[in-house]
Image (cartoon, rainbow, N blue to C red; front, side):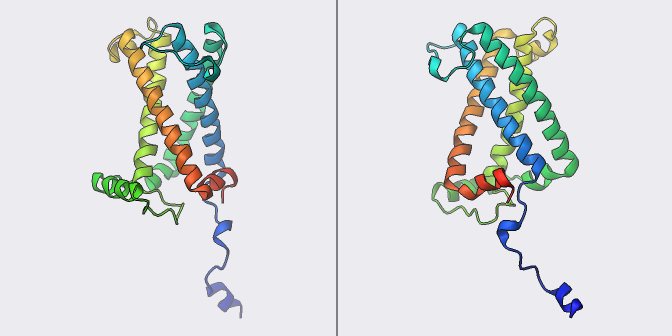
Length: 209
């Protein structure tokens, strides 16, 4: 009887399966808070010396004025950098990035994009990312690195002049930083929309199952 019991397949409900481990959920929400703080305070900093012919509404900025926004921005920057480095390190060591983000092929991205636009992309198995998710998550990691490095080159253009020069100078670095911020905002909008369309994915990021 005991041998039969051991050989029987598991009947545990799918809802009991861990989809997002604790370290992923914790770092995900810390990154989310840090990004939102940086974006809102960054908009206040931008308003002090705008690159384009518009300013962000005071209602969606953080800090109240330039000095306050800088304090919020730098505090969020360190939080994002430390948490982001920890996330990258653990993700590489555990093999999560390799398992979740690879392989990533142009044909796979085109196919899944077409399926997503026609409402036919399956979300039955949350343990596996489709090619659209792989592209978005891999892309936002790269954009996150760019936004941090370009931000450092703007913050310390003399001490880190080699980094500022790498971006083409201080003025160009500001545009790069703004473009990276815009890409992050676009990612967050798409990310939230998809989470609302597939609520079980949001639940998994909250409780893990």
